[in-house]
Length: 473
Ligand SMILES: Nc1nc2c(ncn2[C@@H]2O[C@H](COP(=O)(O)OP(=O)(O)O)[C@@H](O)[C@H]2O)c(=O)[nH]1
Ligand SMILES: [Mg+2]
Image (cartoon, rainbow, N blue to C red; front, side, top):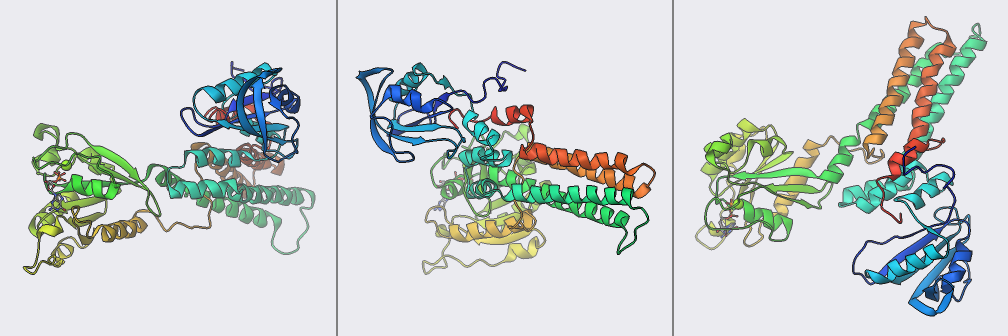
């Protein structure tokens, strides 16, 4: 065990932490959990005790020194086991900022608590059966959520959607185990389909379910990292202006001098169904990149990672040429964007209509021709809608009912379970090994699912998961 071991000897002692982010803010939350929380609180809070589960105004003072006030706060006592951790919990809303929360925490430590390790509150919730491990990970994902997609996936996982699905798979595996035990005990019985065939069919269904869940992993990645949308086009075609308009704030330098954007800029913008990672690319030196020699301001490396390319040009002829150049370098779907529409008028002050020529030129991948003006904002909504349409081509029809696998740990465990069930099926169908031997694969698959849910005593798993949490969570 390492220095950060969370072994049984520290489990269940009294811990405390500031649960809110450091820095200046109106309020901070300080929480304490474990046996003796109420007694420790009595040494630093007055009046005490409050009515359980009711926020009560208290004075916080230095340990056993009522004359040394630290703050005027709200305290809530959650007696065990009806609390987040399942232990006795005291939660304090104190004033924010650098000093107050730290002073209150120091007083709690003096009163008998020890500073909590990262994720230790949630770990206790798992150990006490308040959450399973997948729900605990969802808590971390909720905290880290930067997009609607991630937020939604985390909430679903927190509600237990993935856990229920895996619980059902676990039950199915145990049923297969029962079927092969039946086959061992009553080899002569024959009512309905043979248990042998039924076991194989049930195992195949489990494999199909596991495959379906594993196939959701890219959706979690898109939710976290966004769909990479690269702006490509000749210098001065308005890419940086469009980037700013889509990003909603002026990050890229917009300049009338061609080639001002010296480096690639990225920004994550929330969008439905996935957030967008917009990439505005630099005008690289000609020697650096083959694309530059073609006159397109985008690096081949950027194009290679694009899920979607916005091909920008002011005139149709340039749009066609640029579309063809991008197509030669990237298989990603493209949206042709005719920029600076406010400069083009039909003579009566109205924007010239799109003529659709480009769609004819590259009908297989140019999804649309959109006319925009970064200056006036015209066409931006149509462009956003075209991006949404293009996404359905990028990501295979997301089955909204299926919970999303969000982490490498989850995917690894599901793959391990899948491999074991497949190994079982092969051995079972070959029929050369005794059933109890073949059955060990099923046991191993069940174990992989148990490890995923944290339903068995798996200290090392808990350790790995909670190491990445924030203190106070
Ligand atoms: N009138 C008008 N000018 C624009 C528009 N978008 C960009 N520009 C101008 O075109 C020039 C080049 O724009 P920029 O975004 O830097 O192009 P980039 O080199 O492709 O990134 C700047 O002078 C912008 O102000 C637009 O929608 N309308
Ligand atoms: Mg630029």
